[in-house]
Figure 1 (spheres, rainbow, N blue to C red):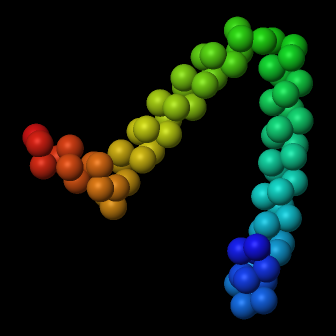
Figure 2 (tube, helix red, strand yellow):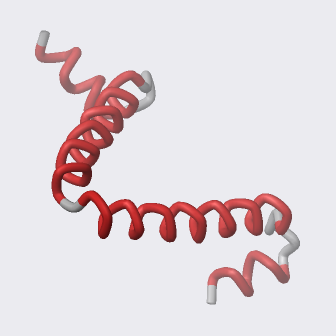
Length: 74
């Protein structure tokens, strides 16, 4: 429903959205095939690495309120 509201308002970047959708379809297809082929040997370490990377990225953002809170404790 929100897509309709944004589309009517002219706030949708269709080219960017279609490129992102294609990337998600390709990534989902490749990820599912890799999971079926390699199983937990690949998925578990990959999940840990991605989670650690996301934590580092989020905590490196100066606008993150959690980072401000942690800096206040130190």
